[in-house]
Image (cartoon, rainbow, N blue to C red; front, side, top):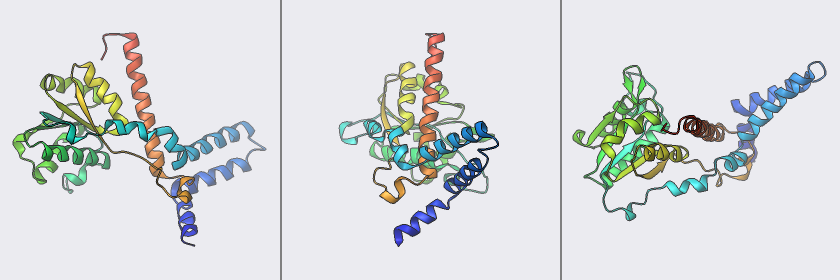
Length: 254
């Protein structure tokens, strides 16, 4: 009874509920608008499939991302900890940590963990934002409120994407032992861009997705969390393709 209640509740969530309504509508219009209905059915069915944890797990390959975890026991010292920017939710009525999106919070938590493990390391928080509210400023304020001394923190507020972050920070990172903190799905592309600038970084990934432990009754029900994981993976595919295209056109492009 408990599992049945959970299944019904999950199916009534916006993503599966409205997708199923769309499927019913397309089926009803098959006779009069065959091609359009078939295309609609294909798109909605694909969206539903990639939103299930079972299929999402196959797409995001979480096991491969475990290679990017940072093992403190393997590194006695660390000079700099770079935390890349992510989502912000600007609202002056909220505290700095409440204006950071979940992705940004996850990255900052990992950065703070390393900052406490390596008290002599400099913490570099990066990322632009919206208007006068930057990711780097919110991260700095949050880090200070959680006990990190202001003199240990350096901001990089001008970077609007990962390529900017690598380019702007490279002069301060070359020849130092650097831990790079970003989402697990983003690490491969981020590391590539920093390496292209001559900066050798140690991956310190966070913000993992793994649905293998989800109970069976949830594996085949569309979930917004699974769709978010697939969306993040797709974002990285597009980003990596764009970098490869730029380098193919211009081998000097970073």
